[in-house]
Length: 545
Ligand code: N01
Image 1 (tube, rainbow, N blue to C red):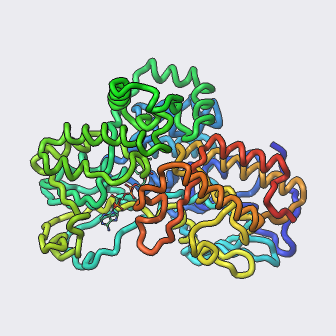
Image 2 (cartoon, rainbow, N blue to C red):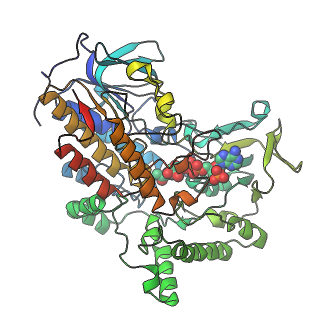
Image 3 (tube, rainbow, N blue to C red):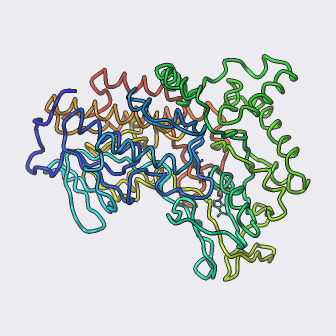
């Protein structure tokens, strides 16, 4: 907690502020708090939205709710903050998360250092002055010694380039850019493209309002019931009393969730016992299903036992056998793509006003003024199209910032063949730039607040170290990046995750994007140790000068 404001500045320029943080979601908010309130730095946060909240500010689609349980989807760095807030449901809905974010921002007095409605259009490193010049859409330029990106992993909407969209006479929306005033579906014929975590949340809610909902499915998906419910008083009290234990669990598990992965192999139990365990996990609901056995994500045959169980559930729930068959025709291992959880997703297909169209067999050919036309000529007439088509994940939000580092090297050039970083925290050639939950870090494979807190703390400690020791510049050594990229690949290849060939983890959902497995699959707890160890050894692998 040393105040380190007096540390040396770059060669010539005096920056406007010590640090610019881009983004005011959980990551930017915590980074601001640490740099300003612990290190005493002058910090400016730039946020393109009109308020705090990051992904939750934009993702206001029907049914938007977090898949992490509420007592884990929040800051846990402070006992006071953790215990002062009380969640109302097992999984927090988007409006409640927004209330929480605003509450924290006010509680820590963050908003005075956040500039809203401010989109960053370029970030350029000036080597002579050793500072970053950050330009905004309004044409303003701000300078800082440190640049911290807190732009999230899933914040660049992917609207597929389907020919004819501009000719569509109805309305269309992407779930990640949802109108703040909401969308009225009553009486409307709605088409939804996409059956990922988002689409699976949206279907049952839209189905209740729309005249008819047609779901266009390219890749069938597993889903486990969320079993959302109001939290009862004993649970709320338990959470407060067990703050340390809950946090300890989240910090020591690979996924940063408040539950442990069972230590048993799927082959240690009889088939009958296995079925009972899956049944119990299904009844319990949530992401915990994948923690039933330790080998589900590494042994394909073990995974098949879970996959078969879940496919049988789909056939049990969905009454029309042809629809059930299409929904259960899943081509990847369970949880190799981010596993969705749902509230009445498969049940929604039993409604008279919901139909499923398989666009793997019969792809979307174009959007017409009246709706969506498929390759075989069938046209679905629609009033509203909902794109639940995901994001240009992980690299998209960073590349969109138009970052130029040392010697005129752009991030787009540096990452032409896919992202390359050291620890997902820094990129060679981009001095004093830090990426919170960047590609190459556990990020999306972890409960995000846990990943975010670790990164923001590591970055704050690191910047404190630089200032105390009069170090002007820091960036990773190319050989350290090389080794880390290799390790990220090894970690992914030790799991079944790369086997879902079309997942956004690989960038495969965006045409033309390099296919590289982006998040670090070695587990958050192990990653935390690696980062701490590197710092303890004087920031091994980094050039400090
Ligand atoms: O996006 P996705 P998402 N034609 O990329 C389909 C997080 N999240 O927004 O698989 C037809 O998973 C695409 O098909 P395919 C979570 O990490 C968190 O649902 O590419 N279809 C797929 O079905 C999640 O993983 C919460 O063949 C097209 C869908 O659109 C991540 O966000 C809640 C298409 C996209 O699925 C992204 O989820 C919700 C095309 N041209 C989401 N293009 C929490 O609870 C794409 N698709 C925290």
